[in-house]
Length: 357
Image 1: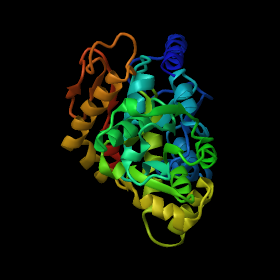
Image 2: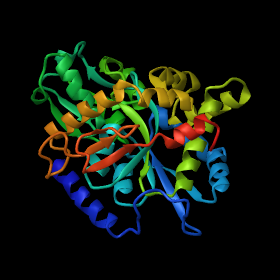
Image 3: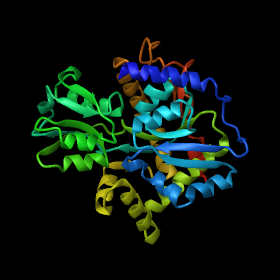
C-alpha cells in the first residue's frame, strides 16, 4: 500500500506541475470552467448531497459567478487521489489524510471549514470479541494508511497492544461492510458511519473502541487547493453554512433535509440522527472558529504528523514529523515553516460569522 501511495504521489505531483495554478486565491475564474468538489459517504459529509440537490450550491455559485459541481465518489481514497492529481478543486477529507496524501504529494491546501470531529463515528468492531485485546493476532479489514489506521493504532495503544499485533488488510470503504459480514468468527474491521452502524449491529459483533476516546483528533474538513479562486472558496463556505443552519433548525425544512441525508446515506431518519449524535458537528461559523482557535488544534496537528512519520506516510524525503508545515489560524506553524502545505484558513468562516459572505 505504501508503494502504491508513493506512485500516486509521483503521478499527482507530475500532473499538478502541468496545471495553470498561481500562488494564493484570486477572484477570477476562467469563463465556463466548472470546479469539481468531491465527497464520499460519511455522516458529517452527507450534507453535500443535500447542498447539491436542493440548489444551495448553485445559488451560492451564481452569487459569485462560478460553476461548482458537487460529486459523490463512493471510494474515499479515490476521491482524495483525484483531488491530488488535479481533477478537482476540493475534497472532503480528514486532517490526517490531507497530510499524508495531497500535502505529502506537494499540493498546497487550504482547510476552509472544520465541519465536525468524529465523536464515536469511527470504530473498531470484532466478531466474537469483547475487548480491544481480543483483536490480537487477527486480520483487520481497513482502508489502510487512512485515518482508520490512525484510529486502530490508538485503539491498540489503549488496549496495551502494538501495531504489529494485528495485520491490516486494505479494503475499500465501498466493500468493507459486506466483506466484514462474511469474514467469519475472527472478523475484525475499522470503519466509519454509516457503515459502522451497520457492522456493529450484526449478530456476535461488538464495538470495542471508537473515536469518542480521542475527541478532536479525527477532524472532517472542507479542503480546497490553496490557489483556487476566491469566489469558489466563498461560495463553498456560504453553501455549507446555509445547509448547517437548515439541518440544525426546526420545522419542515429541517425535517426534509435530514430525511434526504438519511435516505442518501442508505438508512432511516432515526439511524441518521443516531449517527449525528456521535458527530460533533460545528453547525455555526462561531462554533468552527472556537474549535480551530483552541489548543486542541495544535496538539492534534503534532499527534497526527507524528503518526504519519512513524508509519512512513509523509513521503521519502521526510526526516522527521516536522517535514510538512501546518499553518494554524493566526500564522503559527506546526512543522517546517519553509514547507507549509496545509493552511487552516479561517478568513472565510470569519466572514460567514460576520454575515459578510
